[in-house]
Image (cartoon, rainbow, N blue to C red; front, top):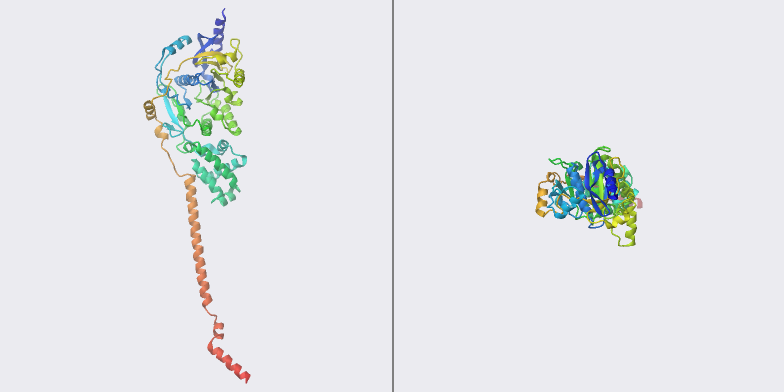
Length: 506
């Protein structure tokens, strides 16, 4: 029996599934694709998270596209973070190409061109369904971690939220939060001190500076109403296919704080909203986070702890998280250890540091008698990757250098006209794109301050009036002569006295 035949049986046995699955390509042996040696990912294990990694230009984005398409076809909604702006082509079928047909002939099944239902979302002023959340929805703990506050400062944030709850003041946007923060050490200083204790102006000043830093990255556009409901990410179209929700993030690549703020709030909201379901037949929603290093870049240890905690717990809600990045070392080890599916495209070794990183990456994969993992990592071509998944029992599948299938949709962006048509046809635009600025903490405190100022002004006027009256009364009393003095100073009395004195002298 030949080694190639042994390899085929090795892959076939290692990737056998009883339930539904996605075929992402065929395994390769000694640099050649083994037809029909399918590399399959069970839908049951797709909530065990995953990683798509590789050097620039090796095909990571197309792999992401393939996974999103096949998930949609299986009725599983998808959320994609599109930082480079090259995923909108999912809405149009692939025009096809002889090289695509050649690739699929090697894999062992024909190529089929398809378009998919997409929803275009936006965090900023770009066209698309607006994503927003209120400050209240974040809560004091999450907001403090995003702002990287000290324990004392976090306590003040908790007091601010408590004050707003006690006084029924909605915290909707950042201007609401800033207003309450300023009020706590100015006009409302006495009120806060009596109810919650003394609040340091130095601490509120430090918190305010952190909020301004967040605003400078565009967070003022994200905080507010109407809040996005995460259930709208799980829609299915009339053909039973899951919607592919694409968040356009091309204008926030240089604003990692905003990106991590959004991602953390989204994951927290999904975790709070979705019911527990354990290991079901397929996930409820799969999220692909492109340029994943932006989440972890400049993140505080408290923020990293929060992300790691959510990654560990959200699996039981039927949510799969897939991180897309250039190097696995971009992902913290605690998160990397939670990723069941690993699709590793080629890595390039230009320096000693690169070679060391490749050796470390190779150690993350199962041993294989058919591959020298370190060597394969540097020799993979475009659209080829090392794959290690989990079978239906949660065990690692055999390591497979894989010729990946081609995307069924267009591997290019939509034209402005096509993009406008997609956005105009959206059922969510009307629901979320009307900006609402209802009365909240900012307006309510301004009214309270004005009312207090008016009352204080009235009291000042009353005091001034009373003082004026008192002054006039005093003046009248001082000009009215005492009757005794009046008698003593009269001319008749004086003449009488002089007459008596004269008689005495004589």
